[in-house]
Image (cartoon, rainbow, N blue to C red; front, side, top):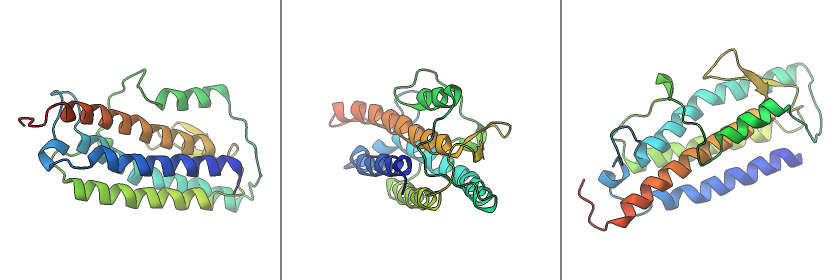
Length: 189
């Protein structure tokens, strides 16, 4: 596997190790507690990541399949345009710019931690498979389409990097909620 994809695999492993600690020991009420009327609960942060995964995986599949069909192979390293790299940086936590979530990506309130986390790890495994299947492809020249803004296309490597940055962003957000929940041993919900 090329070094860029190995780096993404390492980031995914780190996310997979981080997520359980955010939800450990929480009741479903605490898991669904919102710090404000316009703020997401831990359940909503992680549920949003599951929805994003469901919508992003087909775009990864399409880009990978198109790259294979066209014989777009390369070993890297890949250099990405400044605008694409800046896009990834904007996705990283803590958020510099807050963006309204499109309706298709909006999480559902009231999910159980078991359901959300089971789905979360299933999607993580799906993403790992996409990373493996992209090995040997030209991650810069193969374009992936954004499921948020269909007119927006970026290199497949940037799509992977942005996907992981988006996960870190919402895990950071969930951790901030967890810190508030953790301050009170008997939080009235």
